[in-house]
Length: 374
Image 1 (cartoon, rainbow, N blue to C red):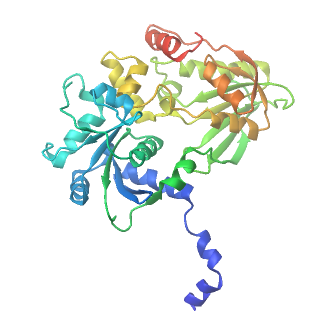
Image 2: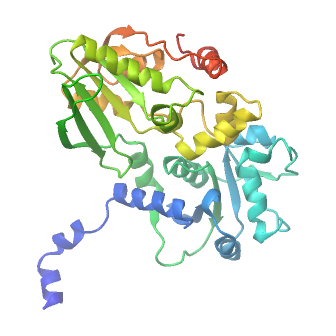
Image 3: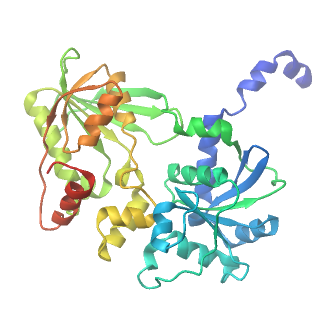
């Protein structure tokens, strides 16, 4: 009877199979747990595992399947003085005589810059230049999307063990780059210190990534430019009152201005640390303690200056019914990104608060290297 039921409605069974977006969400979770994922492209098959979460036993099993290659971004490769023959990334061969734990310590030393100043020479490194790097490039993008260090072991394999998540890169690459649908899960009245006329909206992306929030003050007129701020989550500044940045004062000042005006909308986007996640942000802070500025620290970790996706903010504004804003920001990039996504920025409203001797260097770097108008 069970077999007859399945045969009678094959479409029902097909809807239970994960979509490529859902499979990507599984792959991100697998990488964070230390599991490899299987990547295929044009007849090539490889297993990819994030160095940060990889264990010695699994690394040994990967080495038994083939010749592992460490993929690093060009930013990290520059620090290591490794040649990025593929332009945006470097492929480094794992030496057969790499140190203990089947080479895990060697991989971690290249992936994480924490000990770079203590042990600056990591080589000699053998950087590959022949053959395609598409599998490695996608593996790095996937690791970034999982908020892991962009350092991935890629092992070519004729066959892959059963049970691992498999991604066809031709399908997965556009899905990973696509802007996810944003589901307005719930909204409720929330009186806050800045205004008793507050309302909190919770939005859930369809790709399984972090939820984002919109705090609506009063009843903003959708026919006029609304006072708005795109605020990236900052646990250290917003919650703990960190003096290393100006995020907490900016959040409170933006809400206060909206409260005084009687209307506004603040988007609280879960893109901690300019999109690299809290753990990597703390790694960047540790590097800043060694004397590097915020941009240099990001580069040494293998990230770009800013990994945030401001399309999320534009999408939320449009979903809430706003197509024009008076944007509270010092960052011209936010203005340009919103306008490129169809949201008119009628005015840029400066938000210069929270400077102290603790964060003066950080703010000066944002102005000099990231173009913030301070």
